[in-house]
Amino acid sequence: IICACAIITNNKKNLFKKGKVMKVLVFDTIELLYEKLLEEFLTEIKNNPEINLGLATGSTTELLYKGLILDHLENKTSYKDVKVFNLDEYVGLDKEHPQSYAYFMKESLFKHLDINLDNTFIPNGVTTNFSLELANYDQLLKDNQIDLQLLGIGPNSHIAFNEPGSSFDSKTSLVELTEDTRMANSRFFSDLDEVPTQALTMGIGSILNAKRIILVATGPKKAQAIKDTIEGVITTNIPSSILRIHPNIQIYLDKEAAKLLDI
Ligand code: F6R
Image 1: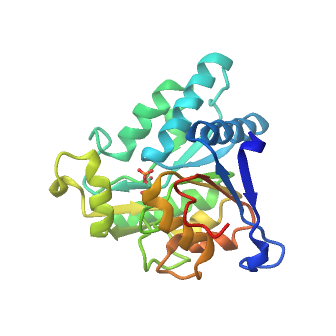
Image 2: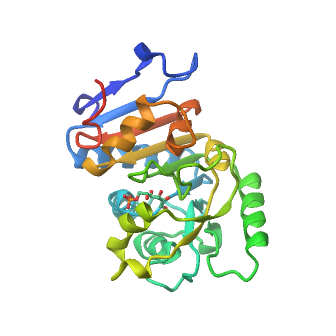
């Protein structure tokens, strides 16, 4: 696997603060990318059976979750002491709604593992008290530092649902989704009008507090966002650009997502 990817430390461009190196791995095939990603997750979980995982939803996560399920069936890796903290949830969709992220996590991962559902956390998009919900989620993240955070990225460079313009020290917030994001996510709904206009999201400040972050992007629609993340200026207009200051971040890309990089 190592040979199938290029490791770019990009220090020639002096983009990173001294001592901090963002590792970018470009894989020849999607299969190789997810094989290596799965291996990393399994190593971390086996090294720390009480690991706090920060997980995402969406297309990018699906092959990893399938891999974790298969491994659980074949090798009996246990999740009984693992805690999972999800990044975000749509406002207005309850956990039984097929497009809610709580439902996605249950169907795509949790119900296939031996995880205790009481150890899985996701903001509640149908709460009657949003300010309390946001404060509680922040407290939860303060009390449970995330050991390994999985991130996807939006075509507009959002991470979680922190859209362009979000402050880099944001906490868990109720945010308006941009039209770009609603359009991109409308593929999961029967109609654009059904896509919620708001979401609850872990803030960028909390994401940066994770001990380790792996961001995954595949396909040509992510290429510009990846170029901006790695080679552009660090600006709130590119929420993902702040990941460059994190001391332990790796970016996993297929060739299509990496195609605009200056390598
Ligand atoms: C989802 C999330 C989002 C997605 C991003 C990419 O929990 O936080 O930031 O990671 O929108 O979505 P996909 O993977 O569907 O392209």
